[in-house]
Length: 187
Ligand code: SF4
Image (cartoon, rainbow, N blue to C red; front, side, top):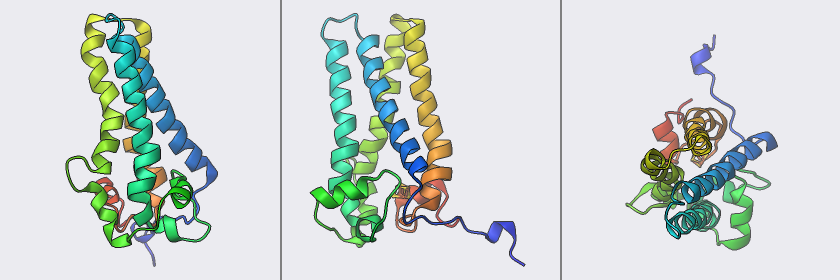
């Protein structure tokens, strides 16, 4: 008889719309609140706050919604699977703006210092690291709430979205370094 441990998670060719909305909703909220938080927390300097905040917003949105579909998605199984919808929905955008790649190159997303995986992690962590020192010298309850929400979104991503909603059900998980890091490859 099959034990509970032997039952593998279902793999989605098309993620439920609710999962795609949760993934992109939390991503966009993270970036927007991160940018606003950086802008407000450094506002004691006339130029630094808005400059850093806007630069962060450009970096994070470009990294997620331009670099990923151009550099990573063309090598992904979702790019070539008919009628598929990945967790971010970026396979659909990628098909419109980038040429098909080679599935063998998919793990290269995690190779090198400035690889797409590291840029993605940086886009999530930068606002938290940037806000801590400025928050100490420029404390306000509003800034503290923004900081806690962004930190909460990061924890939500690592402890709920990746292991339970995204990577667990992903058809790319057998090749994806992140699925291995999350320990979901064989679940
Ligand atoms: S395993 Fe996770 S990180 Fe890798 S492609 Fe799938 S959803 Fe994205």
